[in-house]
Each structure stands twice: as structure tokens, then as C-alpha cells.
Amino acid sequence: MGIGFPTSFLVCFVRSVGIIFQGLWLMFMGFMLFTPGYQPKGCFMKLEGDQYVVRCSDEEALHRAVSLINIHFSWFLVGVTVFAVSFYLIMALCYGGKTVEYVSLMKEEHYCDEDGLKNFNVESQCQEIIASKSSKFEELGEVK
Image (tube, rainbow, N blue to C red; front, side, top):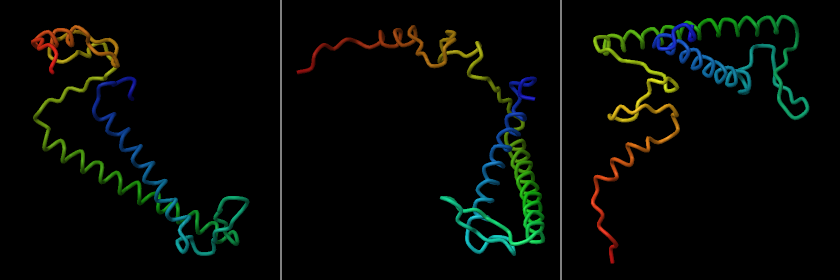
């Protein structure tokens, strides 16, 4: 969707929510799996080599753990989705009447300051603007 609609705010918002969801899910799983006492019933943490691994004692405990993770993932997805939709609706109510123009930095339409000179290289400074602004100051000479 980002290729078809490069200036769409909704596409950028959904992509950002997806990245936030992934980060939160990984932190949540790290907390749930590797904090002593939070492993599912019948599972334990074991040191294998130089790292800890969560193992389950039998198939029933493994199925219980997988089911628990699936339920956690579903509720986590619902929670993040409700938060994101609520946040989007609140922002739409606050800023809905104002038109906000979204422009990519890599486009040719990127302009420097208020002079309107085209800046095709994002990292470069507009030398014409800097030169014109520096000529407005008077030369004072050396201060002793």
C-alpha cells in the first residue's frame, strides 16, 4: 500500500502501529517467558550451553503453553488495535478540519526555507540562502 499511496497518512499510521505492536509483543513475550514464575504450568527454564531455554515436561504442558500464547497474542492484538483506532479517531476529531500536507523528504518538491530554491540533495545546505543571509551582517573587524 505504501507504493501505491506514498503520501497517505493512514498508510504511515498503520505501518507505525504495526512496528509498535511488534516491539511491544517481543517485550511482553520476553517478560512472560524469561521471568521466573511466569512460565506456563508444566514448563521450566533450563540452561543449555550459554543460554536459557524454556522447555515443557510433556505434550500436555506444551499444548497448554501454545494455547496460552495464542490467547495472549489475540488479546494483545485486540488491545493494540482498540488503542490505535481510538487514538486515530481522537486525532481526527482534534485536527480533522485542518489540512495537513504530507511530503516525503526524498521528493523533488522539497524546498529550502522560505526562498523557494529547490534542494535536490536532502543532506546539503542551500549555499545560495546561506550566502544571502551572511551578506546581511556588517563586517565589524577584529575585536581586541
